[in-house]
Image (cartoon, rainbow over all chains, first blue to last red; front, side, top):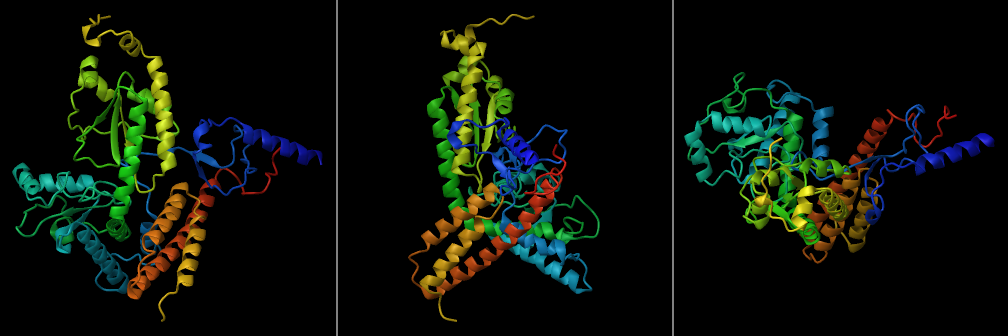
Length: 371
Length: 96
């Protein structure tokens, strides 16, 4: 009896222990792994600090880095990881034939998403390899021709690394990392030299066994993307607007980077003046974010904020990239906005630059001394 | 096979929502529920029986996907958290 009471008291103490709990608005919206595990599950190792049973993970707002796998894609891949594990280049048995059929089906799915012929699709290990093939396989002058043909996208070659850009501004293709494709036009023919030599697979363009489960996943992801494009695009645009509007109406001196017209809605890059980006990222520890990559450096609209700061450099250091994807919820966006506003305000309070600006000092007029 | 009746479509809808709520991952769970609701709502005025049957067949396939993935991910989650706690739902016998 005593033991049970003691256990109950201890369990209550553990569940009441301060994990860093998010503030009021969202009632503790951090993702729970193993949601259905009862609260009384305590770790076996009692020497470790008593942790609450279900593990809370940060909100995922970094879809430009990688995306969660769509369950439909995983479902398509699994058979090829379990029973149908043949090498697609094995010509002599059913395992090979099945695998090859799956690979060709995937090729068709990828081609159909971008309106290409399946013979124009070569599978690679990802965006980096595709870019290398496109650029090094041809030389720079032909690269321009690729872009002018209109068949290629924002990136220098059409490449799908699961989560990267699709052919039209729409939803991301949510497959795994480790696989990609390149579109090499046949008419008029684009000549590409193979970078990787070996058994002559993929029309000699890219030797190496094609990873059937991965390309099946890529194909399935493309098919899903094609079906979901309109729905996802509408939704992501709406959430994107919501995030931007809510942040900008509550915080002054926020600049949105990137071309407002040719802008993929799910990728939002904001600069918060007078705030160090790294410290903001650290402060937003409940949200998985990143400070964005250099390649999205379309010029900022000139603003008096920029001029006040003095250089582009300063603003670049305080930019955060928010990624909204197919699986992002409204609650996650609202939570992120709330936390972002809260921490930017707090960090600005601590910033001497901000203080000076509030006092009406023109930052450009400051003579910084060396020390 | 006779075309799907309203009752069948509704029962499929309910089954899909019920299964989707069992996803242990927050993002999958919310996506599935939302997408199913929106898809059924969007197609509620479809009259052509052939089209209805196509949609129903697709929904049935998706229901299969959801069932398999809920089961698969359930085991995956248990496998992962098995590293930190010996078993779920049972009091740890070594707790002092």
